Length: 461
Image 1 (cartoon, one colour):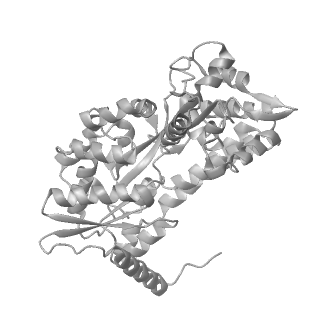
Image 2 (cartoon, rainbow, N blue to C red):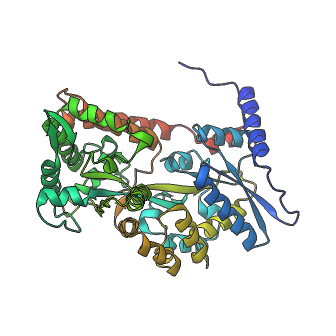
Image 3 (cartoon, rainbow, N blue to C red):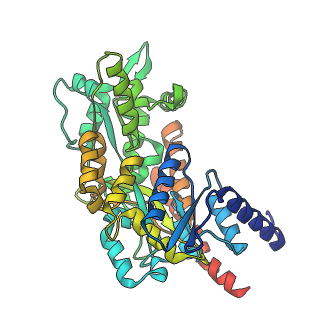
């Protein structure tokens, strides 16, 4: 068993992180009459420029606070944060896109919004956010994180391929899972016995989406119980496994592996490798760029569409949601300034136009219907109809990965199981496997909960 690092080394590392963060971020002098807000985020490149512009506009909008953004790309974001807290110099605000809210909230590493803002302001924020956005930040009855950008999954499809296979026009929505299966079978092609085009193939990472669509729940919040063996979850996994059984495990694994060898990480739908594929709203840019190239070359422009996931039962939800969230580390020097920046970015208190400008620049889904309905954003949607579909889906019942301590491991364990089911010829008892996973994760979560939180450990020192 690995021994924990001595506290002296932890403090030394914390100091290094704090100094490094300060060094790379001292690009502008903070005005003497402003309170500085240190903001850590993971964006870089063109997205980083969008973030810098949001910061610039916020700093120009008022005279009390001055945000200094620090790009912290790469792995071990949580280690950097905890080391900075240990070293006594945490940032005032961070942005994260991993399922860590439950972990960090339980450990007392972040403030709830109720601790840094008035009850009225927090309630206004909750009302402002779409339910799908609000669900990404609520833990134990409090709002610990504020979503600033949603990620929604839906079914992209190649209209040319699907219409040719069906012999008719394509519906705006699928009637059922069975209709998706039928289209998938019609659009699957072989050449000399080798798969050359797949109609549709479930992604091992997306049982999180299909489970709720089939009417299942991965976690019972009321009783604090992991429910991976929910009958609807089992049914969803059996359905996914059916594609492997029809196509062959080796063929499926090889086909997926070949997707990775496409030039410049091309979206496989654009290479006609699939007729239908499940992915997020960011792929709209890839599709539009490919269509623009075709027009420039005078070539036929392939038409694409987007379907919502078809519900299997009346209890079925519309899909799985994740996204980027703001969190305020405990012991932040300027939590109030962080809160003001959060309100600005999300559009609350008269900042709808600024929030719409941010979403347009980043190609991001607004977290509030008021921003989505603004003239600025509606103009953008009229020019990007595929993206508009995802904005509509964001307002439906989307389910996040459970906000519990240990959620990151739960997410990985489920994905690992589904990958084995999809890519291996091994005969797997799905009910037994999900029961075992459920028991393992319940013990893991219970064990975490039995330990003192980070805040309690700090208080004891």
